[in-house]
Image (tube, rainbow, N blue to C red; front, side, top):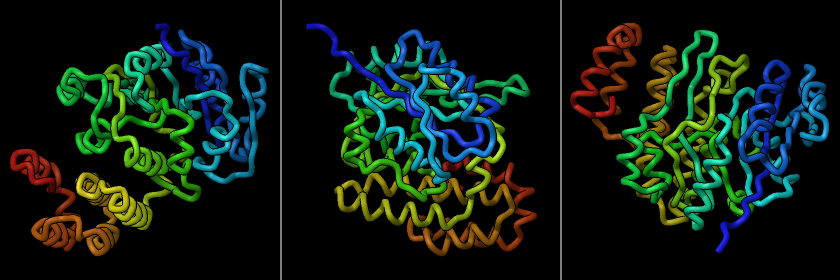
Length: 322
């Protein structure tokens, strides 16, 4: 029996990406297994992104919309896609040459998978620094000689949760999950992956890095949208969704991890008022001793910030998640 033919549409949302989108498109065009189509959705750019994309001629399908955000741009690309599976790539990142080839082989050897992801490189390229995001040995141990995780939420809480540019997903699954949520200003990708995982927990994973994620992009959504209200709404909504899907217990471990992560980020940025808001709205996810300890530390945030290296060492030794 011959391997099934896997057809792939690549969806690239772009906003003021003229400086780097040619590099991104070239990384798709030079794949050892070519994509069946490349769709770039210009989300109302004010620079010459359109000119750069159009310079590739009929190699790329170019769509333009009024500025509506990454979620809507991705949805526009998905709805226009003609092929069975969708691969995503941000306009400032790039694929390694064998990305699609390796993922296609992976899906052909695991035909029951409806989505798969991989490790990736994080690149501070101006400083000539590039590193693997997930330790290959740790990932291999978690996989236990499989090519997939039994539950995406287990991979997430263990820190190997993939990244948008690594994802390859059946198009029907994206529609079934409801597409990307318009107006979700932060973690719009995780919001989608959570909704898929409620229905299809089993997810493929390749330990080899297949994408280069470029840090330091101007106007990064991570820097622009860091208000705690975003994460509070996201987690409360998904706790309700997880309960409806009978997945509450496993999602609560993820919600706790995300809450702690945002508390740590707020500490590093010295946003004490945001920490207290997170404790007020999401404190029910955390042990009472943790809530009390964090609140007391916010009383003198300057001292706490100076003590953070020591606190991290204590946390690592005691494994208490502070």
